[in-house]
Image 1 (cartoon, rainbow, N blue to C red):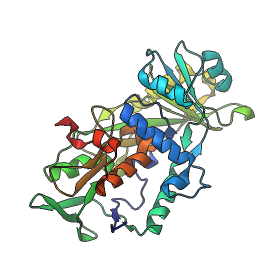
Image 2 (image 1 turned 90 degrees about the horizontal axis):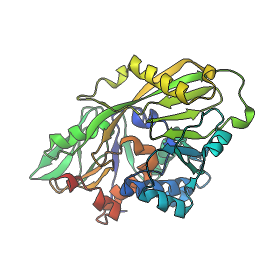
Image 3 (image 1 turned 180 degrees about the vertical axis):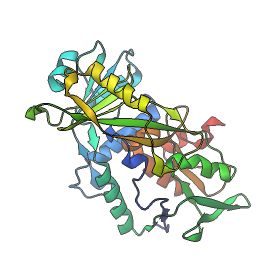
Length: 348
């Protein structure tokens, strides 16, 4: 209330990059406690969409369940998630029962029944409709934007298609393009631009109808995750490749060595390697990471009227709704504790 909001999107659609190129996995098991609390808040919003202004009947998560495998000793977030009932201790036997395609390994096994695949396209569409209903103006195909600053405060934003847009406040929420925007107005953020790859293989052979929605399996020790559908298997080797400059997004490329690494990881964990067919497609998502793996949220004290909602890294689907809420409350002068702990100045 009291704000006139304009959203400038550089592309013709909102999920052209990371949001449309993620594995869409919902995971509340995040080691950093602040990022973990944001993930928990977002999971609650997926469960109760009406609480964040979305239709109550909206089914945003395909609840396949999630196994997390790890060699690490128990850490504080284990106890918290166990106590809340979001996580349950499990076993190799239970893993093989629920995910017969996955060969057991000697790991600590935890089970998240409510986790699964976020229906990202549905989520983005619902958020867009909700925002427009609330009076938000959308300007799409804006291309590269720049910020106008005078006397240490934000004055507006500039884009080639729309010209100058006067503003009292600007939120940098541009994913892997966020760092460049902050740098341009003397407000650098400790962000690292990287990419991650996902490879999708055809699933061969007769499919067990009882396992059409097998759980996601994420092996933190070996560093990969697998999501299986009736006719395909998606795997990421959890690679993190630094990108000094973002290439033309229309020229997304997946390195052949990444495909090889993904196939090797999949064959090593599969109970039936012969079911792994040819590559159907590969894709790359650009991400901005922070050193402590928590986002950058809230006001920037160096430029009055400048705010951040960036550094979500690989957790966009996991904590995005809570990050957006924290940024919005910060603009209205009521920053929640999460925004305080995610300040851009924590790295000063």
